Structures are given as C-alpha cells and as structure tokens.
Image (cartoon, rainbow over all chains, first blue to last red; front, side):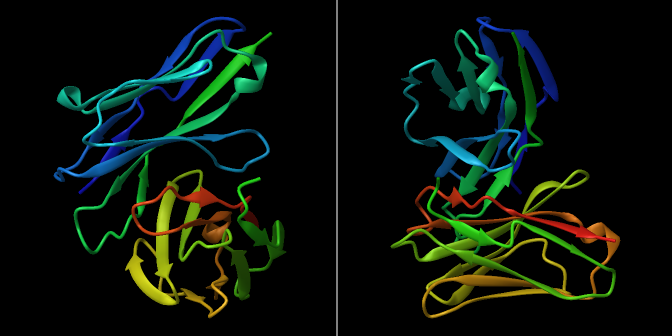
Length: 118
Length: 112
C-alpha cells in the first residue's frame, strides 16, 4: 500500500525566512509520480509540481525548489524568502501508475500548515 | 482558475437526505476523480471515471455513487446523509491516468 508522511503538522515563520516542508513516501512500485499541492485559506487545491520517479533532478521555480531523493524516499519542498501569501496548507501526494487498478489515484499526506507572519 | 468547475459551492442539508454534487472537467480531460477532505480522514480518494466508465474505487461508502455522462461531466450522489459526511468534496480532472490532476474549487457539504 502507498503511504505519504508529512511529519510537520504546522510551521510558523517570519517573512523572508526560508522554510522546508518535508515529505516521505512509501510505495512498492518502481514507476510513480510525486506531487505538491497548495491549499490557501480560500480552500481550493492548487497544483505546484509533478515529479516522475525516474527523474531525480531537483527543480527550482522562482522562490520554490524541490529536492527529490529516491534513496531516502523523500520529496522535500523549500520556499525561499517566504511571503505572507505563502501561508497555506501544503500537501504532498503520490500516484502509482504501475498497477492497473489504481488508475492514477492520489494518496495524500496529512498536510503541513504553513503560517508566514509579517 | 484550474478550469474544473464544481457546483454548488456550499450545501447545507439534514441527516437522511440525498444530495448531488456536480463536476465539469477541463476541456479535453477524460478522467474525473472525486476526493473527500475531512478533518479526521484528511484527503481521501473516492472514485474515478475515464470517458464514462468507472475505473477505480477508493474508500467510497455504499451510500455514495457517481457517474460520468457522455459530455464528460460527473455527478457524485450522496444519500442517507449522516453528520460524519460533512466534508469538502473535490473533483479533479486529467487527460489520462499519467497526467496531472487539476482540482475544482470543491463543494462544502454540511449535514445538520
């Protein structure tokens, strides 16, 4: 069975601080996809990034960066120079494509509540 | 705006009642997924349809059912509602199973 663990329930930082959100996953499959979604106070789920299991290159997008390490089954997300607008719940998710029955369903972590104070 | 629409945004109803939640996927997307977000269970996958056919089922109660119509919109039917069914219900769509799922704004259901 697949499992995603986000050990940090809540993180509080002051604006301009860097913050890293941890994500550890479990899967028996060799092919899978990892995602990060953001849920701002308005409630919608916003897609941030998708990473294939066979692509361990780290990615940077503006103030966001992602570190994927297959050896430790981790897919961590760093926000550099955080801003108040980054305050949201962040979810890490795992999708299995190797098995025919799962058909791409997402398994989510419990989410990390990030609060950025001015 | 993800391009996925859900109606209604909010729904307040009583125990024992039946409601229907509606989802229109992004243009061109054939897959529709339903998820439930509650405080105690978190975000959980309910059911998935691809081009009108049910393809995967998750932790969906027997009181719940869904379908995807020829125009690809989907409906989630919740019946014999209980207090514990109060949650945020999301619909997501993707082109296929290997593609990113984009989520609608959700329907917030409150059962009193």
